[in-house]
Length: 277
Image (cartoon, rainbow, N blue to C red; front, side, top):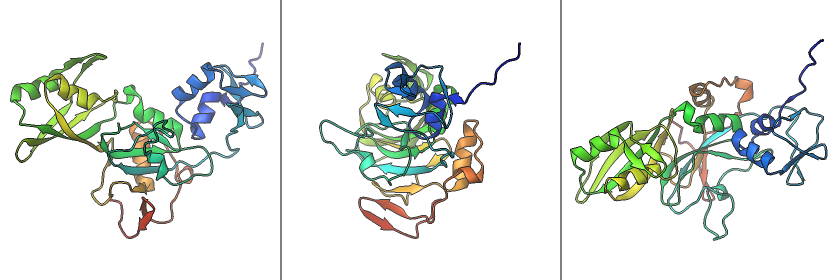
């Protein structure tokens, strides 16, 4: 008996590559019955090709016949903005300031809560986003933390060794004392996972109060001082390829979106001439 060729690719992979979300997120949509293929409710094992009609929540969201190019931007999130697209409370969202795209949508690589500022990476490539966030990739996240008062050496040792939280043991891989004035003291901390409010919860678990928190690095990408709060910037090709390589993906030059300039945009303004470093 001759094996029949397998048609197309898995639905969640096709939609993730088209920029609709991570594979895990789309698998959740499939389980909830939100996606149909050719008029029938999709299941997790279904494979699709260019000829299939795909609906999400009853709307036509067919992926493009030609692969969408990977675009990656960095955004300097201010305190007071949320990372959700819609908010019943009417709070400001990061998506209000991001550039529009013709197909798919922006996917955030790890979220920041409303009281945390700093580096956000967003991409149109769902597979890249999923790998960068997945615990197995162990991508480093670095934060600048301002703590009320100087912390005792024993407390820092405990934070490195491990602290029991409600969702399991957590710890910082690195802690660097960067000084401070008065009652405020700054530390840079590094961890390799992205649990909800993990940095704040770790400090709170050892009796410390965090008065300010900002993400300054994600993997190979650091927050440039020239990028002001509320502004975004396209990553150049080499940095996108380096980020992809970090999680085992190879992106060819013709698979990457090429922006025309290094223009910074945000809050309705644009300033030219500040090159990404």
